[in-house]
Length: 81
Image 1 (cartoon, rainbow, N blue to C red):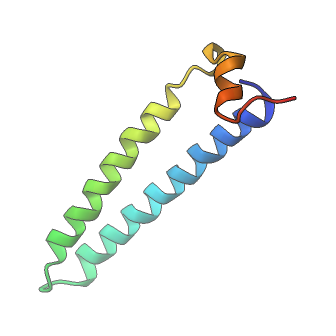
Image 2: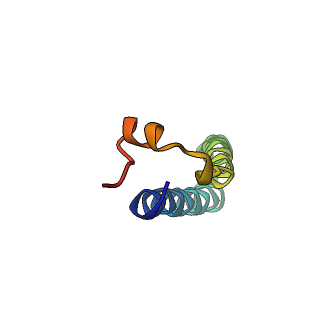
């Protein structure tokens, strides 16, 4: 996988990392600012989603793009002309 396909993967990683950061900030804000209205439960739910997204990001970071064949890339719309 080369060029634009690698760029798309990097873009996905970057966007996912941004989403993780934003959700973490939201959870922290809810935990601190919304006391007495189930804030701990709400923040805990958001942090659960953050944990799942962090897992997916770890998986994406471990993708070895050098092992992707041209056939697989073409079948998934990643082959460059």
